Length: 220
Image 1 (cartoon, rainbow, N blue to C red):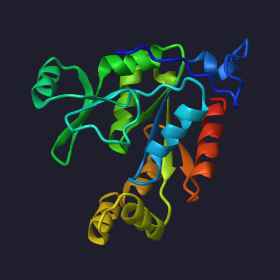
Image 2 (spheres, rainbow, N blue to C red):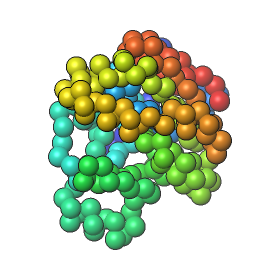
Image 3 (cartoon, one colour):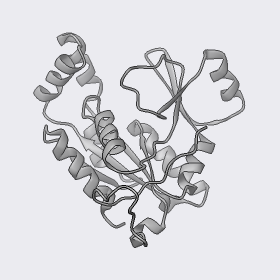
Image 4 (cartoon, rainbow, N blue to C red):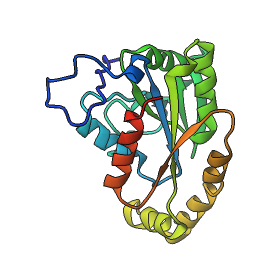
């Protein structure tokens, strides 16, 4: 695995010129999980973070699906079915989930490395696995080092438009996708096992990114 770069949460500092002292809240390493329904812009926001925030790092996931053009650098390690089974038998995964016949998962050692790294790491996590990340952090004695963000979906009309126009789904497939995620926002708002920081989707990617950046900069 390649070495993960450092991550400085400053507002557009000149390259090579970083603060001598980090803010108090960055003295504790943070793993930021980011969740939300399909088409709220998680991949685009991460891409903007990679481009605009110096040295941002992503938590690596593992999958048996083929690479896609919009996969971000360092986001996935691609495994054959046999390689997946071998790692699964060794108990490497902290969580795993099937999606459309392909497996996705995150290794325990990668989570521990992110929690103990010198600087924060971003991770796109499906909502029903966020608690597992918090529990794992707690088992490592690093519960303070994880923070979770949830992107609230726009209205149904906007979401359907994004799925059909940007992702190329048929109207029927887009409707099924929206129905599949119908309860995610309500469940996130009712979540009591850990605290989410909520990010509103105002149908502007720049606005969402600025709000995300403000959340990352906010003291604990």
